[in-house]
Image (cartoon, rainbow, N blue to C red; front, side, top):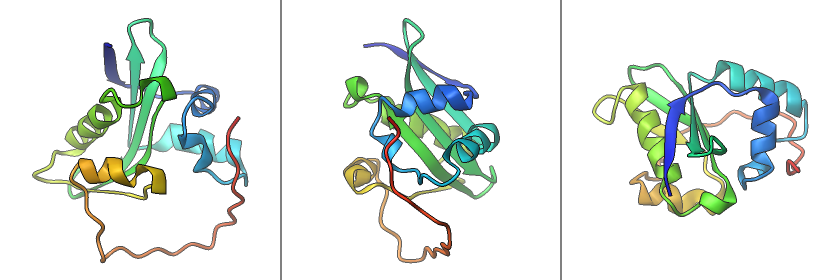
Length: 144
């Protein structure tokens, strides 16, 4: 199975359609969903896509970074038919390299409980020095 990774900005509509074909679509709150997705796809520091030979979108990875010290992986999704084929790992590795590389950049993410094993296989650990301030309204739903 062959695919290509590229820096690419998606439209909000394309990303929402992509979410329908992944398990990533359950990580967003219902509140102002479409408005916030539009901001996400426009403003992520790095926006990567993976496409198969036919040009079909099979993976997405977004990150925010200062390109000097840190990178936060905000979104990583692979369509269900392509999971287990190395697409997610390749997207994260490319994201890390574009942000400045392992030797310069500390990478963080908030992982869904179903994705913890994936991030552990990448060598990520559970830090005890991360703090969260969250007052956002958050009604769970799944993009369908």
